[in-house]
Image (cartoon, rainbow, N blue to C red; front, side, top):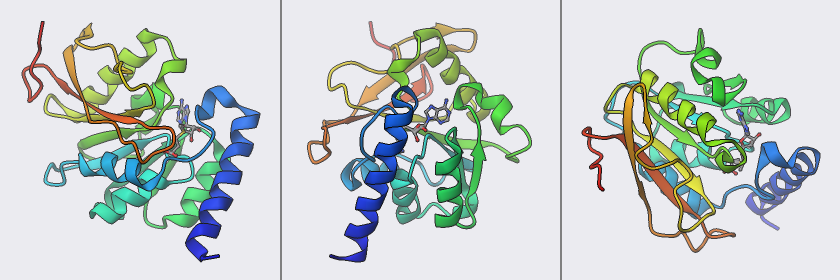
Length: 206
Ligand SMILES: C[S@@+](CC[C@H](N)C(=O)[O-])C[C@H]1O[C@@H](n2cnc3c(N)ncnc32)[C@H](O)[C@@H]1O
């Protein structure tokens, strides 16, 4: 068996152990596959200045895809709640900043951990286990950090519905989302959503 396959199996086993301990936190029984991770990374706009914040990196498949896409490690900041994943990510991705903390308190969690602007947020959080107000609050905080032209990237296993409420109105404006075609190579199939501020590259519709 190849080294790559062995390490994918080990990650799968590690992931499932964490899921058994806390299914609501982990939200999936296995790490994202390479096709989904690559699609997530493909949407990052590399020419936008600032750090790329990844939420819920787990064992790191999306991190791997971001690095393969050409994101320099010093531009990557990972926010992960589960301490054992944080240790693993630190060992696996030297040069990448790993922050152990709660992504839903994003501004507080990142205080003192980043300098300068945030270019994009790439999230694998199991959003649908949280009430709508927490999800919208997360978007507000992300756009406060990114500015109006920011981009919030999120995957979901639901193939029809956006995991963020579309056109959610809040103190800092309204957001619009666009879903990708389903990534059928992933098990289960998933979709990647991109959220922008209305009027800033995102066209609000009725
Ligand atoms: C569905 S898994 C995705 C893991 C990995 N990115 C992947 O694609 O395989 C969700 C991840 O989000 C993390 N997570 C869940 N809630 C979190 C929170 N409030 N703050 C930070 N990380 C969280 C979990 O620990 C887990 O690693």
